[in-house]
Length: 199
Length: 374
Image (tube, rainbow over all chains, first blue to last red; front, side, top):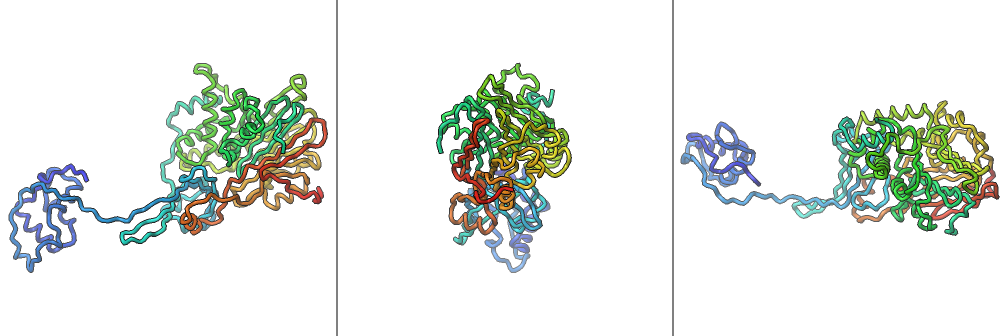
């Protein structure tokens, strides 16, 4: 990940180090506390900086177990030397899309709607029509379901971290802002003139 | 079915339907054709009309007029390809589109980035073709379309001295009242949702119904014109405004045989008894058309009722079995919207014997001959 902050830019305020470690001991699983401006000053600070810190500082789990905060003795840290640490990568599930359609809603009823489907994976496949239950639509998309509305439907599978494979299907309605016709379009203007509509 | 071209003195009405699309090709004698609307043939990915011309060995340059009855996907897909190939054709579309709001709609459609082809994108392409054919500096305002169709408007005329029989094509709609309704609808859509949505296909009252006169024979082409019983609109507007020269012997049934695609009065005022009826399928709605009740209704009008296909599901596209299982788990009532491209071909000589009717690629006669016409 690119960062605009150099590790050399990060300075921990003299005197705040013990407070920092104290905080770490009290909140051993929360690295977010490290970003507190009360503790860390920055010359150039971006969101990535906290990740850099997480890479150069020992993790809370790796920190020595102290019996009491008063036992902690830390040197005052004034600067870091650049370290070459590979970025942390967590294994993620992988999604493979096998089939995509573009749908146009043709009729809406109380708990279902009809739509005409254009195959985006095999463009030569004939159009189909199908009925979809509203239960397949997310609550945030439900208000968008009306005749003429455009949506995308995909089917695929997801390979989970543990090796399981699951079928997935998703329907997402188009949320583009309406394209208005107020913006001049020379081609449309020329056509409208040709058709005797505009002069 | 013979793939020979129609004779010079023969009229042909070819009706193509591919599940949800509709297109017509009309031979008006002497090798000249008129194309009305378009559907894409699933088998070729090309407009069914152009594929048929390839079979017959007819160059698209023989198309004299291209008509867009309205701009819905199922009637306009591929029309720009036809127009591009038909280098000497004039173009006509509904006068309900002659409004600034429609061009605002084209603008939002242009920016919508929706994969499914839409009427706005096809119409935009038609405009681009027109622009490319007119050199810069020679694009007078109103140069395209060549003709705006409205009630009682003549779109095409050929005198008897210029061909084997006289030909006239008249537009019967839209009425002035319908046009203002369409304008308001376009405006509402542009203002309310812009490119987030596509305009629902519910403005069939602006469709261009057509009347073809070939010699002393007449053909009524219903497009998707609907009727909701309101005076001055839809079929009621047509009946009020159009002076019928004689009744039509052939009717391209409007709106895929839906009950709202007709007004009972059209059967007594515009159409002969026991006509030839041709309709196309529409598999995209809740109820595929023509529904069984539509078939019964049409067959009660004429036993010579034909359709471009059955209103049943076509073979689905084969996908990964896991995808199919998940599709079935999430979506119900899956229907493939495009079947084989059925073709009804009606040929007759004006003033001659009864029309000869062929059905191809899944098109069929809907009524058994034992059903008696009402």
